[in-house]
Structures are given as structure tokens and as C-alpha cells.
Amino acid sequence: MPEVNDQEPFIRVRGLEQQFGEQKVLRGVDLDINRGETLMLLGGSGGGKSVLLKHLPGLLTPKAGTVEVDGVEIGCMSERQLAPVRRKVGIMFQNGALFDSMSVGENIAFPLREQGVKDEKEIRARVAEALEIVRLPGQEDKMPSDLSGGMRKRVALARAVVGKPACVLYDEPHAGLDPVTADSIDHLIKELQETQGMTNVVITHEMRSVFHIADRIAFLQEGLVYWTGTPEELKASQDPVLSGFIIGDSGEPWPEGDGRAEEARR
Image (cartoon, rainbow, N blue to C red):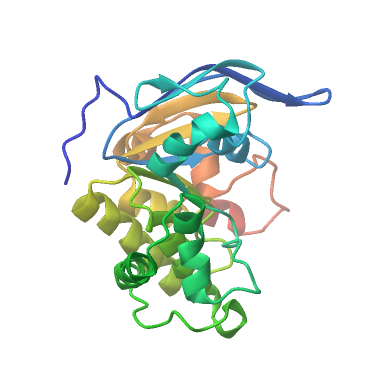
């Protein structure tokens, strides 16, 4: 596994605030994302995870605070200035976000063409390499409509890594997948870390995945980082917010005689 350098995070977030209209979504987030680690972002719906993720490649501009990528502050950059930053940070959007009118190969090639790569032979080679990485060799000519949900996720991952970024961001990569397919996505994420030295930032609600592949966890609540630590520290935590999230316990009482209360707390 790549060596993690805690002193030089690949991404550094300080005092990050964001709001839409009157709704404050991020209220001063401080977070370091270390090189070569898999960091999982947890928290309830509306806690700010996806909004935070979109700030990391500069898809959103902070209302306040800073985001540094590889030592460079990106919050005030223009789209043109952000281009080299985005070559370092790939993103796998929720539900894949493939272009239905493009073939698998064309979808994966899209970011390369956006970056100005014009050599068709190089594009074909890099698309084929990305498909090999996600274990879908030879699928260039298929259309997204011909793919299963798990295959679409793999193609989306291939598109995220085809530019060989230093970091990949994943917004709910397990959503809509059966447990076996979700496990295969986890293996791919961890393999990218271990073989390519890639930094992974993963939003998920799948606790099984958290305990399988996370090096570190950041728990967001009400627009702030409530807690950070390792999977082992999360398992051992007696904090009611964290333990309730792990077992899916809202804290509301079950009906009298309902055995689910005992089951939830096991």
C-alpha cells in the first residue's frame, strides 16, 4: 500500500462554508485528505457530503474558506485555471452520469478529448487500458442502455480514471447495486489505491464497505466534520450519534414487543 504522509495532505479544506439561498449547507468544514489513502465520508442525508465533494475539484466555489489541491488554493480559480487541477482529481458521479447517446468507448474518451488529447491511437489505447482496470475489456462499442447497473458503474469508474488522476472522488458508488456487485466496486477502489497509488474519497451509506476498505473516516453532521478516525475507532466509539448511525438506529422507540430493537443493538 502507498505510504501515507500525514504532514502533506493532497487536499486541505479549511473553514469551508456554502449556502444556497437561506440554507446553510457547510458551516466551516476543516478536513485533510492524505495522499494515497481511502477516506470515507459518512453522515445523514443533508449533512453536506455531496456539496463538500463538489468543492474538491472546483465544481462549486466556496462562500467562505479555502480548498487546496496539491498545495494550490483553487477557490478563486477560473474554469481555465482549474483545468490542470481537474486532471489531478477525477470524479465518479452518483448513478454514473453516462451520456446515453455515446458508446462506452466514447463516454470514457470524453475527458481525454476535453483535455485536448487528439491522437486517436492514444485515445483508443487509454480507453482500452481503463476498461482493463475495471475488468470490462473489449466493451468499447456497447451502449449504456445495454449495460447492467454494475457495468454502468464500472464504465463511470473507467471514465474517472482514464486521465490517470492522483485522486478519485466517488459519490455513492454503491447506490442501487446488489451486495455482490457493490463488493466488486469496493475491490476496484482498493485496487486503484494499492496498485496506482491513488487517493480515494468515497461518499457511502454502506457500512460493510466502510469497514472493508476505509483507511480513515470523516463523519459530517449539520455541515461540519463531527468526527474523524479509523474504522477500528468507529467500531469502538460509544458516541450515540456514531453508534446510532452504524446500526441504523434513529433513537425512536420500537412498538412494545417488537424484537427489532434488540436486533438493532446487537
